[in-house]
Image (cartoon, rainbow, N blue to C red):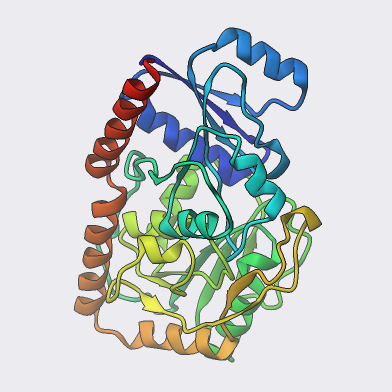
Length: 339
């Protein structure tokens, strides 16, 4: 087994990162090519001719889940809500198998009618160089970091309200939200900084240790990659315990923001919608209470918390376990398909 092809939606920032992480992991077992998801029948035919008999990973979503003929097709779906659109399930059922990054995704796919074999096989998430914190004192003006696209799902509106409730007087703390150039809204206060610049991956990963706490009020995450990065950087994390977060977080390893599971009323595209999809809603008051809890925690307790979080995380997403699990599955595919 020598050739792997990853077809990635490069126009989706998080998909590009996941594609690169899968490439870093799979290259331990063979030659990996990370290519753009084909958008035409001709492009798919070309891939069929070039990679006949190879294993193709589809790092995309929705209508772009289209198997390549004469290849072994593995879908890599990433989904945030509690239900998966029916027509997308039909597409996934045309694949040879599905790999997920969290139990949340695997369980919801099976619940929604997935029939093909499904495995929780994430890439190694410790292959990138991330500087770790060395000081767990809180800055004189506490510094909080959030990362995410300017989309309602990320809960930035809830986070900003919770921050302002915690610090009603301007200038007592700082909230930095790293988002993208597509962000059109402005900050409500001077101590809430919106960074809309395009950053390199290296610069982003170096940003975590400049802050005292990573905070996310996201209503739903299939994985929660920034949370994973914060854990690797040994930065205290404050977020909810729902969806993909339940696979990467452990009790006592983060500051939990209480949430209600509610029907999610918005979608960026009607095709993404499934009736009665649910999400995790955290009120600004609950966000504020969790931030206050972080501030009141002793330095030694914060350090103990991040060590526990990282230990648990590496047991599930570190190279040692992920490489072993993926190697085992690839060997099973090889035997069953005589690849």
